[in-house]
Amino acid sequence: MNKHDPQTGERPDPARRGFLKAAPLGALVVAAAAVPASAAPEAAPAAPDPKVKRGYHETDHIRRYYQTAAYW
Image 1 (cartoon, one colour):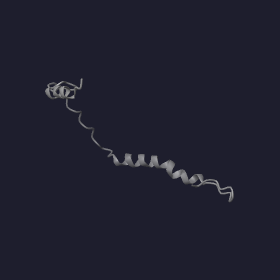
Image 2 (spheres, helix red, strand yellow):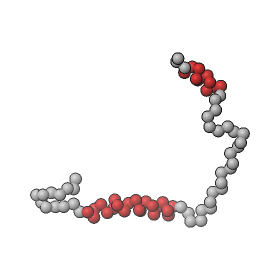
Image 3 (cartoon, helix red, strand yellow):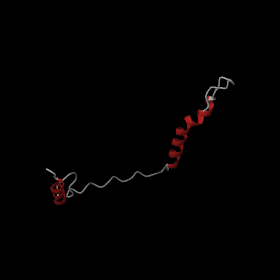
Image 4 (cartoon, one colour):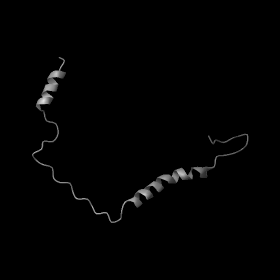
């Protein structure tokens, strides 16, 4: 640890932590440079099929599970 040493009078150098403070900004610059400037926008996702049921719906295998998991 780089703490104040009362015997020698040395104090930690605050400039040593400058790199750690600037590292997130450098990562943003690298990420922004990696994205091509002329990237075409992606096509919108297709509309969901109205025939496909979404969300919870009770099926035969779920009913069987409820019967076997019942303990009362």
